[in-house]
Length: 117
Image (cartoon, rainbow, N blue to C red; front, side, top):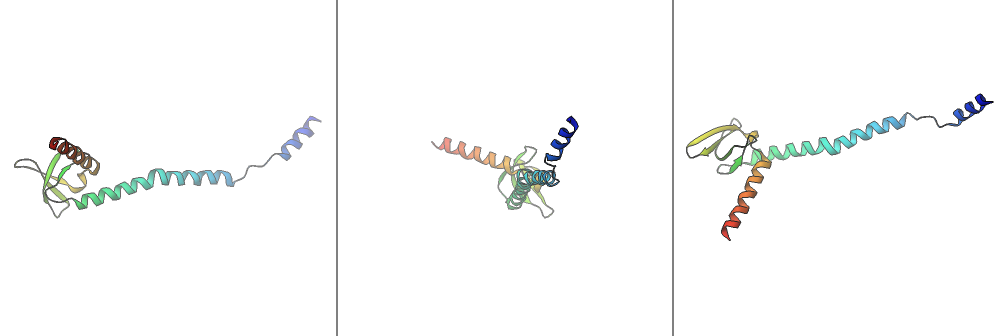
């Protein structure tokens, strides 16, 4: 009697669907795309646009933390920085940090406003 009851319960149990695991895997990839891949590629595009828009005379900060003023933009994708009067350094254009330069400019702008008061 027990075996018949057990068999009857197993026959009435819902069978697992193959679509559920596939849906979960696809859902994971969608979440990874929107939270990891897309923002990273957007940030890379912004960094590239920033590196292409820098001009002579601007104060910048490199990814290594070197502060300087752009003295010359070279054709080979490098930038000549004046880090001290008469002291020059050549760095790759992609080494200019968008975030660190923005933070430096914001800090100097707030310092200039405070000094003017």
